[in-house]
Length: 82
Image 1: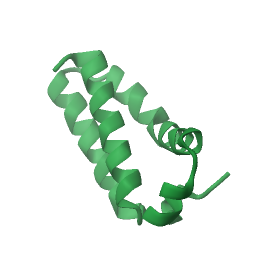
Image 2: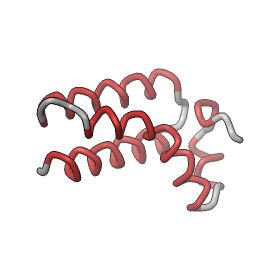
Image 3: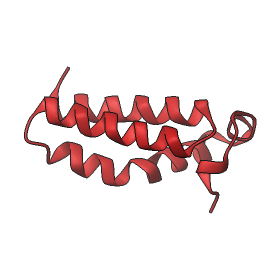
Image 4: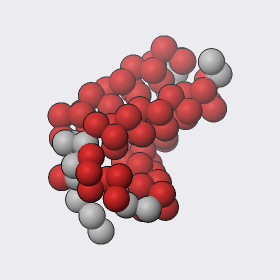
């Protein structure tokens, strides 16, 4: 298992799409449950923002962070609409 917090943009871009997707899915697992169980869309957005902010503090790769942020937005739309 790769420590995604230590990934640089260069290393992340060298990974295959499946590996990239697995990294994002691992990071989003708990966030998805929190978003789905939120009391409102506003609360779900706050949960997503907090998760992305926390990951941004840990991760060196802007590409990973951008992919994570996109995935979180998709989860919010899935459970709470646009």
